[in-house]
Image (cartoon, rainbow, N blue to C red; front, side, top):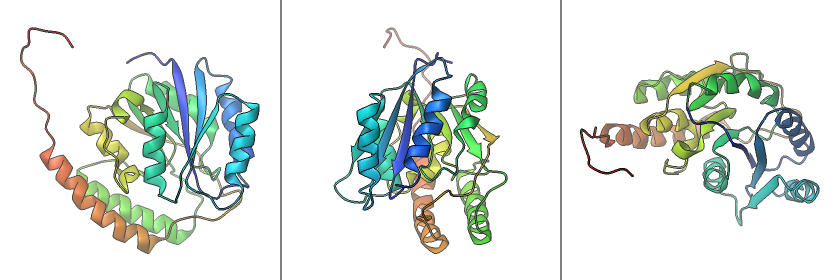
Length: 242
């Protein structure tokens, strides 16, 4: 596997003013002990609280903090996609901005990353409501059945990914729920590892089960089509390099 030179932390944000200082501190604390250059890229999805002002204040104090802000609310998939395309690192790490992901899991995940192109977190002990847990379990089971996938927790935002492969993925609404499958289509080796999951520190969840189920089914049909029509010929011989 290619050697890591720079890590880009890509963080989608929507109305998380109460979490951002702690999020920045926790990521910085972990990143400073890693032997890699890094950047922290916030993608603000047109927050209506003080999230953007906080992000700008962090950027003024730390030149490793970069940010993108949208003109109108566009959703998590759009925030991640734009973040991926603008990240400058060869390795991309994503986390939710709600502090439920634990940056202290990153060094452990990087050990697996030595042999894989993507390490997906698995929230085995989720700190969410019963209805949200049930909804996610059903959603993951249906998604795996449709896509012949084995990932237990595609919804876990804590992921480490090879930027070269990740940037090949075409963005569409809801694509963030299928990143392991889409990475495999690009030739990635993917592994899932258990990670810590914490109670939300402040703020409110942006999702509900009914909305996710309707959108997810529509997306599943599209991804299933992509899998069935994916072009992946094996080259036998050529007389030139790239």
